[in-house]
Length: 134
Image (cartoon, rainbow, N blue to C red; front, side):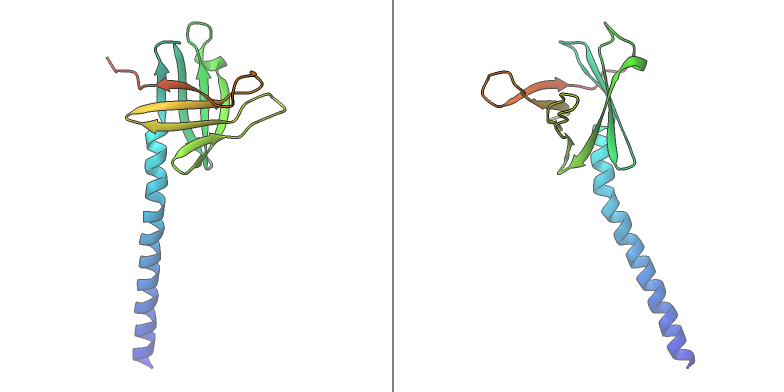
């Protein structure tokens, strides 16, 4: 009887540790993707700034132009991580187009689907970079 209980305890300990390792490794890719997007991004041509942070499984995006507004009065958007990019579904009530944010070559690329412009369907593209620290 003593051998059976020791085997049971050892098996249970092994199962718990293995499950814990698998759960931690499943979180790492998601956290790595988040770290790539997080932080302050700027577009020098338009002086537009984006600040991205994650909470509760989605990204919060603060969008402002320092020339015209303060960071505290930024527009705020929510985006869902999906397949290595951030996706903002179309919001017809507020006339917000479908948008995607991707990272390529240390640049953040903000793609916005054109709405009601009379042009061929496509995406407008704005490229952001991380500001250089002084």
